[in-house]
Length: 220
Image (cartoon, rainbow, N blue to C red; front, side):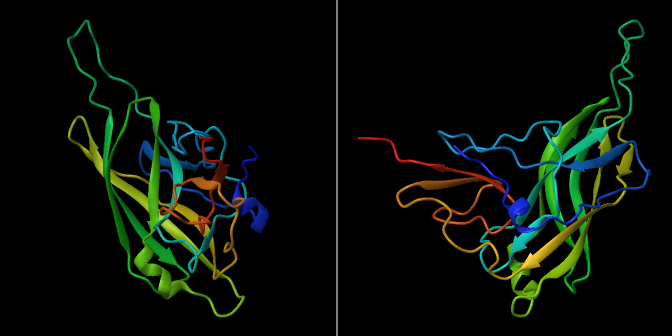
């Protein structure tokens, strides 16, 4: 199967995403969407990026039917401070409770993506973050064939196993918003579209940056 990343075919803009050092727990990188399973269409988001995202993420607000989502790698640079000799348990695992999201370049309210993610000490975890909720899409429609460039700012809040609270540094995600640029049918008639991130059932285009595969129906 030929699996492609839609954004690469749409834009060749540079991705500039960075964060300052405020916490040992961080939103580390945007991952390239994984390839869907060619049999089930399922998506597996690994703890570390197999590859980082190339280009600028794209959202088609008139085609997408679900929240705008991207996979991320979250890191925890704290050491495992457990000790068998002293009978001390590790207190540096991180438990993220929610992600605070704000926007630059668009007049929309801040958003909170609530989900529980454990990031082990000296380790990493994968997370699929909901960066722009679908109810915001009508407010982001650019006029005509124009594009809207916005920046999604995201940071995580949580607690360590020690019960100390933490807030990660802000991580900036540039996004290109269009109206209709990712519309159309991708797969041949009869095939089923499977994407990562997943689309709403029956969609013929994910409407956002995603990896995809066309799955032919089983022969009967």
